[in-house]
Amino acid sequence: MSDYSYMMRRQLKWMFYLLAILVLGWGFTDYQTFFSGMILGAGISAFNLWFLQVKINRIGQGIVDRDEKKRTLGMLTRLATAALAAVITIRYPEIFDMIAVIIGLMTPYLVIIIDYLFHQTELTTRKRGE
Amino acid sequence: MLAAAIAVGLGALGAGIGNGLIVNGTVNGIARQPELRGTLQTTMFIGVALVEALPIIAVVIAFMSM
Image: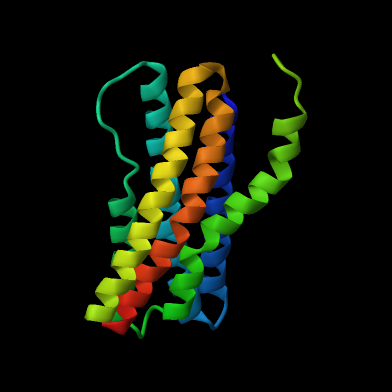
């Protein structure tokens, strides 16, 4: 399996761990509005993360195969899902907290940066051909 | 409404230019050295993800201001 596939799995794994912790927080604490907002934001951004990973993998495969088909990064879809989260939050403010949704939408970036910092030495110190 | 449109439009414009530059560099790199595809894709993924953080926030702020 390539470095990129490992990275995809690691990042999605950490996102699912985070979602599990948020569900525990929603079930066992009194801050249900906050945690449900975080779950909404983190769930939608986990989908965005997976979608971006798949799209980039398809673009890379297309270049290697010399495929002439036009491919996109799917930015409009990701912006639309963020808009969906905002609309749901504005429509149901008694269930979802807006600040929590925004924090949830930004969690995959933390996951990406921390994952990169932890694994960049593996990528850069490996010898050629290993 | 106009403020929301300007926020989303300018955010998406900047992200579009940034994504275009990143994809351009990666496509050139993979076409020259296909064996480096994994590393280049990882770099491209991190770049695109970080570039798109701003327009996502812009969309949310635009919907809040509407």
